[in-house]
Image (cartoon, rainbow, N blue to C red):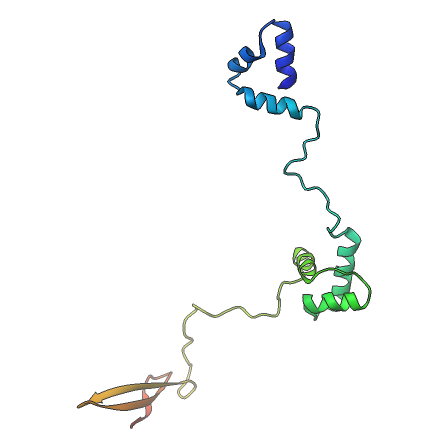
Length: 160
């Protein structure tokens, strides 16, 4: 844009202010671009930092995890530190293992929450115990009852 405005101010013998008005461009924006003209555009870019993990460190973490698959990421961190493999923080180990898909818990069973109660297939297979209180003339009595899950019949009860 800076080159465009310079080109047409020279050729058309028109002021930059007029051309900027035709382009509906604020002069302050144009001068900001002009001040940055020729400089590398590094804003919003990820510039490699000294503390970032290198590729060989990531690979060392993954290789060590392959040799010790049952250890957690925190224990793995300090084991690697003790064995002089790589010196990184537990969060870095976690991020590397998570990105590689190594922290998926395959042995965890799926939750049965929300699937409902599985009805027993025969009598006395599953019992339910219920305790409630009954008020008789201001005196509270406790009723404990045992129900069969199959027939929903009361197996035993006591009032105390």
